[in-house]
Length: 457
Image 1 (tube, rainbow, N blue to C red):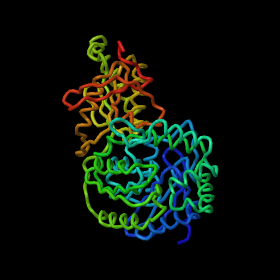
Image 2: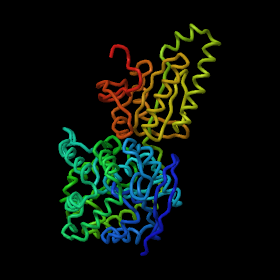
Image 3: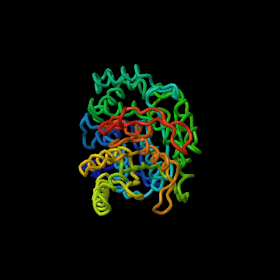
Image 4: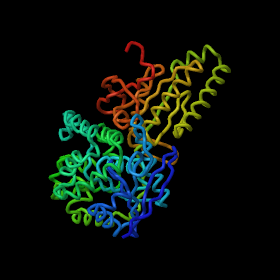
């Protein structure tokens, strides 16, 4: 197979992404790499090229360099890509390659992105393969397999001081490409590949995103068929993490493989590729109408509206409320939210990503102050049920209850939102555990810094 042509697509926010299309199988497969990626350079390394050719033997494959990596536009280390931007990138590449519905094959942090995309956009995904992935980056009492903070600090220091050098590349080769690590020519080639994949600053950005990841709340909302794959002796990812993913994604299958290679296109690839081919062939063509998706809901409410209405009288209040509604709708459009309902003076809106919803909430509060109003906002991400234009489900109730806890000018979010916006630049302050009326269990709530805290806190 000749090296495919490199093409470019421009995303909605202006980033240029490099991608390739190859193979002529009966279905489309989008390969979402981890951080280290260069769609042109990877064909020069035989184990990688062999894996890509194998994928192209049974699917029409689309592979791309994520923003900040490879041949795609670089990014500033102070502005890591948000979850929404990365999901937009997948959509942009799929649209450019004329892909309506595809299987997703993700590795490491790319697998996390596939999982979230599949939960939010099930109509565009017929199956997912997640390899070498984690649900949470840092070890905790309820997730004891992640790396410790000390291990992360040592690793990130190595990336900062030695990314692209032969010394650090040799270390990464021993741990990620164990079966090829004794080959000096391969080690030199992989060092060149790492340099072509990204700068030290870009490596730090993406590895920190992996460290800060926590998609545990997303896993139960994934509806498409999922195959979780992992090599048992992988020194980077404990096999228990793959077992956790498979256990917590409804109906997911787990494939544990022999070997120590972390990267899927390395080592003994055939057992992995054979399993992927069989899994995707069986999943392809299934007609499923999904009425549930992962979404972010936002609720607003004007504080003290009754008193203000009495002060202004009917006509004055009606005019002020109309002005507020016009401005909220304008902000929803700017942040790509969809108005679902208006009840009195409050809005219920839905977004395809949490960072946009939080920023929209902050903008609504600021704009309302210019009108002399105080607005409270609540944001939550979870599974919602779609019924025409109506949106229902427990996530809707949680979002409304979170908003009810907010003070004047405050944007409160659930812990799920906080976890999913890692790397967005948004900062939060804990408001503790709360019981939400009509919702089981206790929920950890956070206030978005930049919004006004409630009185007395």
